[in-house]
Structure formats: C-alpha cells, structure tokens
Amino acid sequence: MKRLSILIALVAPPALCDPTFEDLSQNLPELIYSGGWTHFVGGGLAVLDCNNDALPDIFASGGERPAKLIRNDGQFIFTDMEVPQITGATGAYPIDIDADGILDLFVLRVGPNKVLKGQGNCTFTEATDHFGMPENDAWSTAFTAWWATDSEGPTMAIGNYVDRKDPDGPFEACDTNTLLLPKTEGYQAVALEPAFCPLSMLASLDARGRKTLRISNDRHYYVEGGFEQMLDIEEQRFLNEKDGWPKVSLWGMGIASRDLTGDGLDEVMLTSMGDQVLQFAGADGTYRAANYDIGTYAQRPHLGDDGRPSTGWHAEFGDMNNDALPDLFIAKGNVDQMPSMAMKDPNNLLMQHADGVFHEAAAKAGLATTERSRGAALVDFDLDGLLDVIVSNRRAPLEIYRNTSENMGNWITVDLQQSGPNRNAIGAVITVKTDHHIQTIQHTIGGGHAGGQLLARHFGLGDSTQAKVFVDWPDGSRTQADFQANSNVKITKP
Figure (tube, rainbow, N blue to C red):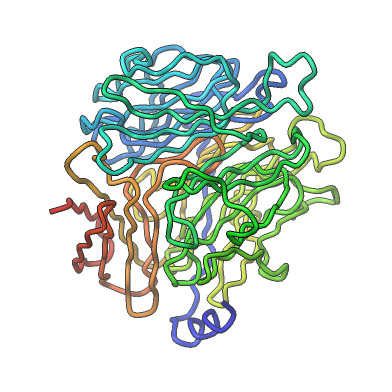
C-alpha cells in the first residue's frame, strides 16, 4: 500500500485545498431524534430522489417522535412533506422492492418494521402487508439488501439489537437477526444466527471477490464469544480463521466501504467506541488493520481538552474536494451520559493525501459539531458537483452544511439502471479511470449507521477533463464508455 501511495504522489497533480462549509441547518424543518434507552442507538437518515427532479430528498428517523420526509426544493430550501406517521423509527434505507422504478423505504423500528411504498411525487403509502412482510416485534438497528440470481425480489437482512422481552436483559440478551427471502407472494422470515447485537450490516463483494454479508456488532451487549461476522452468501456459512477471518471484537456501530488503493478491492471502515478501525483488503482475500499513523483511528476528540475516548457512529467515504482521493466523514457522539466516554465529541472530516495518509479538517471546514451525532450522509444537495453534509443528532436538531469550496477539482456522477427486478443494478461495480487515478465504487444498499442513500454515485476527478467509465453489472457483463467531466451520467444496461 505504501509503495502504491508513493507512486501516485509522484504522478498526481498538486493536492487541492480542504473544503469549507456553510451551516444552513435553519433551512430544515425541526426534527430531534429522541427517546429513552431504546433510542440511544439509531437516528439514521435515508436519502433518495422521491419526485424525479434530480434533487436529493431526506427521510429522517425521529425515535419517539414521528419520522419526517423532507423534500428538497433546490437552493437549500426544504419542505416538510406529509407521510404516514411512524414513531419508534431507528433508521431507514431506500430500495425499489417491486421494481416499478419508484423508490420505496424500509423503515427500521423499535417494534414492527414498516415499508413505505413510493407513489411518485414524494408521496408514500404504508405497504408492509402489501409486500407480504412477516410480522415482527424486534428492536431493529441494521439493514442491507441484495438480489440473488433469477430472484424476483430482494433478499433483505435485518439486524436486531437487544431482546427487550428477555427478563435477564439487557446484558447478554442479543436478539436473533432475520433474513427476509422473497417468495412467489411476499417474504419468508429465516433466523440468522448467532447474533451479537448488530448496529450495521453490508452485503457487498469482499476481498476474495465473493458476495458476503458483513455484520458489525456492539460488544457492549455481546454474549460470550461474540465478534464481528462475515457470512458467505452463496455458501450460507460464516467465515472463520481457516478462511482468513480472525475473530475481532469491538463496539461495532457503523460500516463504510470504498477502494482506497486502486486495486479494485474495497477497504472497510468500522466505527466503534474508542478506535475507528480501517481494514485494508489484501490480494490474498484477507484483511489487515491499518497502521496507526494513517490517521483514521480518530480515537479521541480533536477539539477541547476531553481526553476520554470518542464514540463513532455513521461513517461514509466521499471525495469532498474532488481531488480523486476519497475522504472520510465520521459522526461522533456520546451514547447519552456515558461517563467513560468523551461528552463533547466533535465529528471528524478526514481528508486523504496522495500518500494515503488522512488528516483532520472538520474544525477548519466548519463541520466539528459537538452534539450527540448519529446518522449522516454525504450528498450533493444543490447539484453543483460538491458533496454537502447532513447529520442527525440525539436530543438535538438535524444539521445540514453546504459545501462552499472554490476552485475544487472536476467530478462526475454515475446513475445505473437495468430491466428486471433489480432495477437499480444493486451489486454492480463502477470503475472510473482518468490519467492519474483508478476509482471503484460498489453499488450497494446497506452499511452506515441505520441509514443510507440510493442516488447516482459521485466521483471526484481532480484536474482530469474526461473519464472512462466501466460498469460490471450484477450478471457479470461489462460495458464501458467515455464521458466529459462535470456531467451527470446515466447508464442503462444494454
């Protein structure tokens, strides 16, 4: 990794400046993620285009308060929309379950999960029974989905946290996770065990190039012997030491996945209480923890004099200055009043240098809020080619920040579509090549902390004015085309 980074530094153009942001939180309708101990976790955000105007809209979980659908009217003007009232929501993910070309929302709850069917024009109807979802009464905190070959619908994995009905709980009382398998009509629920209180799940290609389900678990409630998990989806078995999957235990809260070295294999970021662990994918199909000096561990607050460990939640890679090097945002915040952890715990913006080392830039950029942050998203809300930031907070209002940087690099966005049940081509891999960089993004649903986005994928291009885009579709076929920089590209599978 070091040699590759040094080579890139030699051939790449000069680094661009760090970004700056303007706080426009006053433009959002007020929503505070609140509630008792069942809402210490959660607070996820789902970002999607719900009226086909290219502007990203927001579904925000509210905990004990009703969740909100917030329409983006452009120029950072937002409207609070009517939506079926849902309380108890911990998070949500956009997904087109019925392949009608209109995104739906899978809403995680403390209690029965809900599915909102998209009707277009940012209207939704409650459709849990319509889709044949089995009844549940769990405390759901994680979600991911994928389409099996020849499947008429998505397979959905749901991570369930503490079993609230266990009389000996909450400690060592992790509930059972669930796989929802599509049938001719509706879905069948299958237990996914063992389960160790997950707070994030992600179905994607692992370092072996195989489709796997990564599960990040909260050690705070671990049963004895609990650890991070990886399920081989095709073989339907959990990997172990013989597969090169060592047992790692941490307070797992969020997952972010992105190729950082240009080898086509995704590195994985795991947020936690204390160290934030970046794992590098190896050509041998295994993972290794990043060296400490890479700058991503972010184990203590970078502002103030509170020397207690940080608490990381949502993590997301995104190129914030369009220099073709993915950066990393981490939402931070105390669980509530946990005395062993930092109370004023600012969010991180870790900017990547050409040598592969990250440096902290949140305070200078204007993103170092010290609320109890939970969910987040890096999204271009005003379609100017720069990624903006939205953050949800426990016991504090939503925050949104406009990227106001000047003289940043070029960019391109890639939107995928295909026929059949997997309309958004979930599972595809997008590769963008320019003179100086090779970047790949896996097009997935899942990861983060209790929320994610389903939008065109954003790539920074540095000073390159054109890019070659390759798409490896879920069926194994490949297409490629050349595009000009600073354009929104839509690619439909032939």
